[in-house]
Image (cartoon, rainbow, N blue to C red):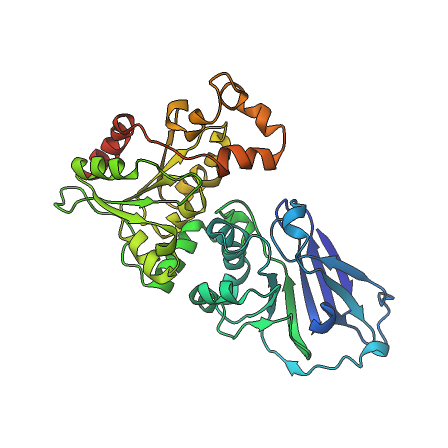
Length: 393
């Protein structure tokens, strides 16, 4: 934690200790000069603190450990502004605090949308009850429009696009960067008011008018609803029709969702919320579990390739904090399309971690990009049957 007092006029508090993101909060007479991507803390010329040369840089995106993600994120400068430099006069004075974040990075991928921005934004901004101004760098209009209901639920003001601003906006405080704790999760002890993932899910229910807070199925004649997240190309289920028929025979009402059907967020959030079980091969689509009601179940199909830890990290660990039961189905060699691409004695089957050691690109190419799954319907039936009975009995 870095704290710098700017006389009686203000303060800069920065936290560079978190693994996922750097954040700085500035208090006092704060001036945002978008043209130079600089945020100034104004000081009077009588200040006894000789800090006019103080400068710090920060990139407001929550994947700081990953150079590939961060290289295209705009760098912001935090500086002190002395009386001699105060020709940077305010064009617009705001009475509320500001939060600055980037919509660059991996955004457009549903998992990253929530992990890297939306959950951290909730953690950082919810305490202000909507009385906060968002300023965005690396402005992604398509992303902003998709998530506008969520953004409007956190701020009652129109978002300011820093990339095109020519005027100076002034605030009583500015928070640069978002507080990010972990994948699809929140550490309540690190939030201003003890927020949890239940709070975040309840917020989403309110924003999208989702009806179900929890599943109520026992002794009901209603068929449990099973949502199948279906991919195209990589990690697709080659025998999806057989799986659908099997699930229907068990007694499920099966709803299928392909990528094009997930684009209209309010509509798809409602579909997810109506379901009792969600299943899919490891991928971004499973992050839609944020819309599932409590006591529902998510089933993750884990591809071949020593991916169990990563899959559990992304979805298995976050699920209980959302009140969701997590189950996994790890495919065998015979259920992978790789069986037709490599001989049985290849490292792909015998030593997948040797592929991992060749680097992310090789791991991605073989196990995530080129692999499809052919589910053993008989073996998978046992898992779906177990879930069905847990709902109905």
